[in-house]
View 1: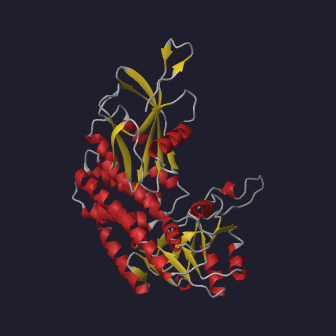
View 2: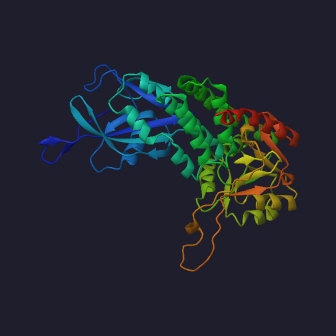
Length: 420
C-alpha cells in the first residue's frame, strides 16, 4: 500500500504518510500487514499510504479509503495535526484523518493480511506501526470537539463522549482522572441530557478502576447505539408520510430511511445541518424537499402531510422538549394544521430535572455590522409538552407518567457525583 515519493534530484527522500481511520459503531478498522512487506511486517495499521508532499491529506485519505475498501462513501469526522514518527531508521511525517462509515461492508484490502473492527484502545495491546496510537489521538473525540460541535445531534455526541471516557480509561493512571473527564464532558454540553445520563450510567455501574470504566464504556456504546436504532424503528412503525422535519438527528434520519415516505426538511440555519440529512436521504432514494426555517410552518398549510417528526436534545421531566431552534414554531404550526407532532428519541434523553440550558450561537452568524445592535442567536428552543403528541422511544410510546419514571431512574444514576 506504500510507494516511495522522491523529492528534487532524488539525493534525499522525504516520506509523507497519511493514516486513515474508519469509524463505525464506536470501533475503527485496523489492518494487519503481511509478513513479506519491507516495513513493519505483521504489524497493525489503519489504512495508510505515502503521499506526495503538498498533497491534501484529506483528499488523499478519502481516495485511499474508497479505493482500498470498496466503500461507496465516507464522511470526514476530523483531520488531525501532522507529526513525525520514526520507523525502520527513517522519519515519517504522519497525517492522521478520521472518517465515519455508515456500514462495515468492505472488500478485500490489497496488501494486508487481515482486517478487524475493534475498539481503538486495542492498538495499545497490539504490535502496531510506529505512531499509530498517536495518530488516533490526533483525531479522537475530546471534550473540546464535543463542546464545539454544532452539526451533530445529542445522541451522536453522547456516543462521542463515551468514546472519550473509553479512550482515556485505557491510559489513565487512576479512577480520579476519569471522574475529571466525565465532569468535563458533562460541562461541555449541559443542555444534552443524554450525554449526562449515559456517562452517569458508566460511572455509577463500573467499579472504581480504570479497566472497569473502560470495559463498561464499551458496553454502553453498543447499548446506546442499539437503543437509538430501536427508537427509530418504533417511529417508522408508528407514523405515516409525508413527513415534515428540521435540523439533523441520526435517529430521525434512521426512522425516515426505514419509513421511505416523502419528507420536507427545513435547512436549519446558520450551519444548515438540515441540508446534511436532506442530502443523505436523497442519496438513499427518498423524495426530499428542502425549504427555509421560516417557510416550513407555512408549507404545512399548503401541502399534504401526515405528521411532524423531530428529534430532541433533551426531554424535560415535565414533558417539554428542548430541540434545535425552530421546533417550537413548527409544533405551533402543526397544531394549527391539525397534524400530530412526534418526537423520536431514546429514553436516555429524558433529563433529571426541568432546567432548560439555552445555548447561544455566534453573534456574527446573525449580524456582523458596526451598529449598536443586541444579537440573540439561540441554538435551542423549548417546545411545550402539550404540543407534542408523543415521544417514541426504544420501549414504545412514552407518556407523561413514563417520562417522570424515567427521569427518576436517571436521577438515581447521578448519585456518584454527590458522593465525590
